[in-house]
Length: 196
Image (cartoon, rainbow, N blue to C red; front, side):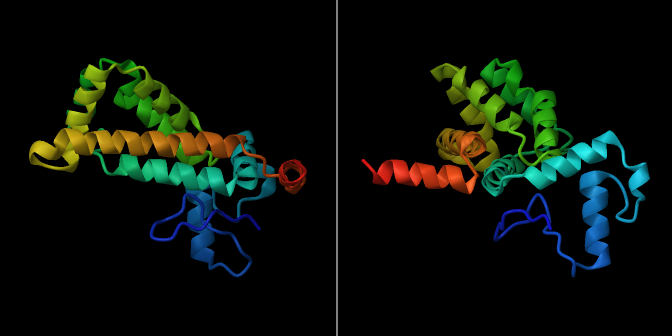
């Protein structure tokens, strides 16, 4: 059985697999995450299928949860093909004068995060992008983002809150990726602190 973290109030990146799941749920998950039907013969599995299965099996719930939070923050903004605001990401990149904020780069990191639950490319790269902004460019990016999320004179403040929340979520993903998951490591950590 492979299970993802429970994310109340939203869809998880990976659905829980149990033996009593309905056939349609298994079919949807297999086709979405592995790009194959659930009854595909093992002899027809590709290396890509094996890599995806490995990623699902080794996924750390804490990393998945942090990535889910990060993705939900980006979901509040337009996608690159949004007809109502097609220039949004171009404006973000221009405001930050930073190629890391280009829609194509962010799209690649988001795709990796959806495909491989433990992938932290989005977290690491977006932190690097924001860290490289000086105060003027950060404020300009906040203004662009804030105008999408609120109206009036609160735009820059709202945008700055979004950036800070994204930074926190990204940092949480990176820390979760480094945190030990082995029970013995956690026990050793506990014993180390209790013995001082």
